[in-house]
Length: 397
Image (tube, rainbow, N blue to C red; front, side, top):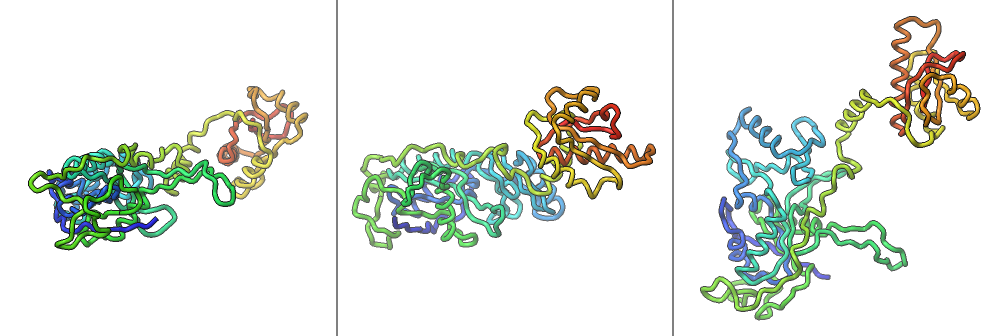
């Protein structure tokens, strides 16, 4: 495969109501079937009127921006100082919900398109109807990445090609069947397009040629690169008609779009920032449910939980797991309210001599252990000690 990445200069400033198909088709009459257009989301937003007015500067501007950000946010993922990583209503996880203040008047902010996939489908259809060319369209924007510095462009919307190339079930040269490999090819193409679009060059559209097969050849053999003046054009419309005489062709259906790239937050292994995940864990600890879990208890996990709190409990406090099944069953039989499904027992003893403040501290230390057990996936119920034991309380696991 040989790829070419071609700029589309000359589009100029885009304003609300502009016809992007006309702007792109006029600036790039050399487009051919099978090209992939990588279109910066900002010009799509401008054409669709996705702009809001804000004060030019001062605290009023910050307050207005915060209000807009709140409206564009489905949930907050992470906050660091003034930086907020949020999930948008589209499902994208982005800094500031993709709100942009660059390359626009100081009194306006640019929001993401309402439905980037629909925007891609609309632009693709307009280019096909007006110029009789069938291209794929990617609506791109810039995102950061976990664990890596720097930004890259990714696809927010796509039409005319699959967002993901699924290699699962294929066999590599060594005979290994691929089990997990799904390549986000539209993100790769968006990043390739950004290499020549840049951020300050006012080139909002790039063309990637060679990734998709052309469904029909150019009418005159067309050039591989944008033509210079006097060269034949790959798709010059018939004079005065706004289109040529070839029948419209189609690469593929529009497809499901870039929505296929959005992972549900419930399935995301990293759905919160570190500080936010810690805060969520502390809130969960404060409302820890009382009761053992359904799975058998792993003695090694119990030992890890006890070790985790050993240095923070009051001196003299002891937690002893009962590992002998016969002993555990005998002790449990004397505990009022012992849960029928419990399979583990930890005896807790407060330091002696004990007074009322010591008992309060002992209760807090028991809850610390319950939290540590919960972190190991072990549910627990706080109960009175077995009859006749020296323990102060026990935990049913």
